[in-house]
Length: 378
Image (tube, rainbow, N blue to C red; front, top):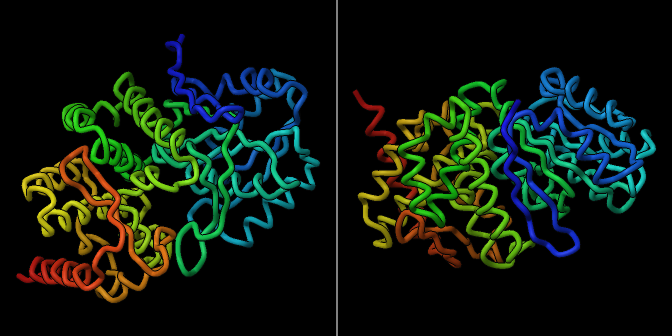
């Protein structure tokens, strides 16, 4: 018998919802969904790999609760966040006769959550969605807060909508099917929460990170803590007009690097975030905002976990500083051509820096490239 799950509330008035974190939560999904929306039909949007692991358990749970379920499956991977797949999923929901009072269930990682959420936001001008994230990254980040979207060739998540879920079910046992690489990528987003606003949580992560990977109480605590931090920020700034931008620590760099690697397995999102956070700390140190020792400390921790921290860690390269600057210019946080970065004054003390000096950033990236060349010399 598993312990009672942890429940985090996202307080958005009439659109408030629960994030349920615990072991075996997928097996309880049917009962929770039937209570939430009696009589609703559902469409499960998932990718083929995730569905092979968790689809049967979810379908069984729904069936026991008397819920009729349809399936819309897509290929795994970031490439599915496309116009073509958005059309396929939306048409699948319509073919399944999913109505406004029915539910879309997003079963999968961040790609499925973003894609299904976007399709739900658009289909019939808005259908409710239940997020069942099955990756660590999705459980602590993308499933919470209502950001949905697909990618453009020009940049990541440039097409989408804010569409809050009505329930999030984060089954910590589902993470046992992940590869070590994908667990590490998700862990980068957990580290982000400590670095942006809770130094004590970051200290705890340095001491307990191995328990997150092995499972049990440490894993559930880390997921719940991350969700609680994000829920509090989302409740204060739902559509990212101010404080919510702090959640993008490392992401301006990360999204540019992902675009330059073609949204491929060469660089997972969490790996890009790890590099981006290390870059943000090093740029902050170079600018005299934070002690170099802090930048060194977080780099050592990320490396100990097995995450990349340098542009040179990306297999196949990403071009030069000009390529990175051009990719960053397409970031959603650009305002009237001005670059916005999340920089730091200390571990746990991030802030929004608007109108960052472009020439200074080029010099910083050039220095990073020079270090990469030095590291490659015999």
